[in-house]
Length: 377
Figure: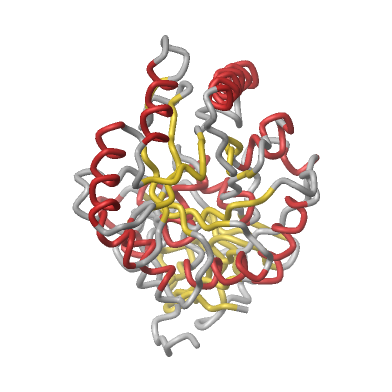
């Protein structure tokens, strides 16, 4: 149940759309291929508890989080689905919590493997892990394709008696924009997987495909895929809508909280970056950069009011923005404004805002602040 809120700035979460997206993605896979739902970063701003529950109901094999803290948050929802911590766990002080909350860590170095092994053996346990290799991303994981380093890492980790190697994975850097490089990463990974199998290391879960690879490169599906952005109904690359029909799960809304008419030559907001060229009707909305609406969108973006696109004018402030509604005379205080989503025949996507803000949809969604209530439909 959502707590009462009084400031009109909120997000609607459409669980029916979330389910539809999951099922649409599942249809792209062979029956034996499992799906891990990426719910890190508060499920990309959509609400971890809600999205994790839907994924569990849709028979996700696993949930993906970025940290021990997020794994604990999943467990506090009451879900017992396997949870893979995708991020680095250095400096290893959180390792005891892996046992308490039954979380599966990513092991990206022999140092981490040996530290967890020692702790597991001291507890008389054999803890599940997924080994991470770097095929060309440059973040975490032992580099593949550089002599025997990655294979040696896998061999030594598999020999540690306190660990159970349940997974082997990598991550694509450019599956949305660079097919050749993605296929190169895939080849390196599959060569390493086969080499590991030859020395007797055959994990149940072999995974490399994110949302873009799931849709663009079926050869990367392996035994499990990791949809994130597509699960939430956002096209992971330009043209994805021609491959799969996704429904945006999140709609971000506010209301008109003040109306005024200003004369020509009147500056609006900080630093006078916008000045009226005519008599202008200005509507103030209860949303600002403290809610996650990027300040860089000042004088660049639009919102929807009364089914019309109206421009944001002046600097976006911490808690409020102003828009020009001169051409929509019907607007009244209390009218609903859509920041991301549909209203009438118009729509504004996270991708549109991302383009104007010189970023990607992930950041637009993830930065929606916790103080913005999520209303689950």
